Image (tube, rainbow, N blue to C red; front, side, top):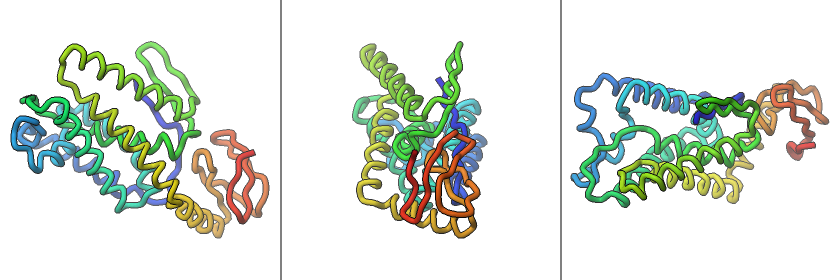
Length: 250
């Protein structure tokens, strides 16, 4: 199953997101990438971090790069460059430690950005629940699905795969992905509860309204606005009311 974001515009430039994509692309040309992998039974050290920047194949890198490009840029936009950098490292380390916890005696090396992406998707699940997405299965495609539904189905599938492989005593990274996703959800709720995002959104509103544009509360698309009042976003077909106190759905 693949989930594709339909439209979600940024205010900040996703400098770190593009940088991480470029860095992971460079690692494709490294010899012996398994030497940078995380192996629980060995003394891992820096491999807790380095393994997150390598991929086992070009196809895996391309898939991860697409997910980073679609979703990570919006998380970087919301939390800022510094927090995004720390979250990128945190989710990767957390996924590796989860694999270590479940498979302490494993000699199978693990590389890939899937743990980082899972954490980012968890935050996206909370921050942008109404953004429209496209779900692609092997024989079916569903369009204009709210992201909280598509990502909810995605994490259920990851959990199902992990339970199957765990019961069959197969060493799997799905457990790390599930834990990273749940950590992303928890951190996003933490940011919201402590009003961090409210202050950030207010700054975005003031900055954009000076230029006579307003960000749609559903998909973040800039919408021309000459004055306060009722507005309509043609991109996601959302009506909302904008005044000096903020945006409200209608």
